[in-house]
Image (spheres, rainbow, N blue to C red):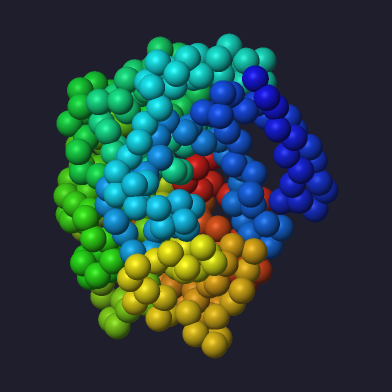
Length: 312
């Protein structure tokens, strides 16, 4: 069992902590550049690849355009995954540090629901750590069989027009909202990601419709917002570059790739914060994904008190 020393300057004073890397299956995510706000979290690498073929997906760059991984999910033997999870439960670090294990970083968490049910069932055997299921799927039937207190469901949902243009093989946003409502009604914690938010024509109307569609069905526990991120490899291997039209000469270059112009991002975030506030949603439960520290400061928000998708 290897241990990874993470050095981060997320706060004014740097610190170190040793986090286990267990069998290459439970791996600390420690790639955050200094200018980007993204707390360290744990990846649960049960499989790689995704069926959904979103034009903007960072996995296109992660897998360097390799078709076999883009269009299907290749999973590790489930016994190896469950053994690694048990090792984590028994590890001294994790005994001291309740953690969330993100199963959707290298694949859609529900690419293979029967396997994810076994993983979720494993987490339900204890009450210290939680599994994060991150998905664009609407197929939650196998996991809606009982309340899952140690499993967090996080649905990535975009405006209908954005989904139509660039989320090629995903269920519709309405199907994902219904799936989120199903597990919410079963008693599970449900978070929402609206990311990437594109400033398409009449974007305010499209995203207002999305917000009301979500809140008419259930109230999320947490909402994470994001805008397009043009990582070099993502741009290189994207087969449909039309989504990149929003990167202009005024775009910002960050440690996490190109970003649409700062004034547009600020307008988008202010719009969402205002709309969610009118619905009575707690501001402290809203965060931005892989956004710059400068943007957090411009919005008068504290990046050191972030409550985003992947953390407790």
